[in-house]
Length: 192
Image (cartoon, rainbow, N blue to C red; front, side, top):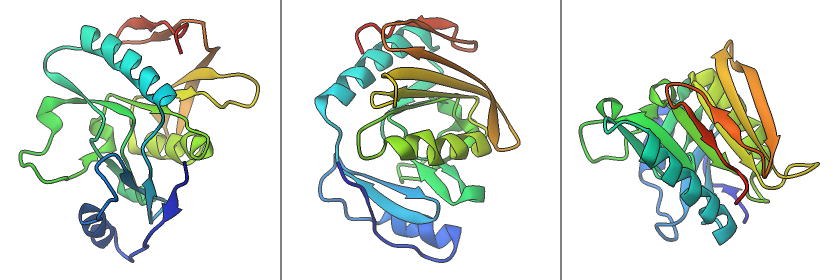
């Protein structure tokens, strides 16, 4: 998959307005704002989708009815000129905008962001998104890295402060990883 910069307006509001009106090649593509530039990403492959499905199923059994699990919700970090569409994001339903417009949710409203790497965007998930989610105050960032340098791994980042995460726990695929409260479950990665 290849992601290409499309346009780079001058103000955050202008940039979000352009993002809201991007004409995507089809509904499976994603347009995000990465460090001030609109970037379009084609749909992921089935390996990625299977992992997203497995995580989604565990989350659906775990979270309260007052929270939602989304695959197309945008979270924004205006301070860093970022607007991400995580592979999965858990947001309290009360934090969602009241209308149907594609209005981004402030990143700090998200309880968990999940990114699953693809070959073309792995570095973005490891760097820009890690930094962006930390700056935005997302309490938990789960990075499922199928293309990690040494071996495929899952890393949970937590405790955002000062634009970085204070804690991280990394396990190779096949090992379980604890997802702390307010979730409080163990994610089994053996089928990743």
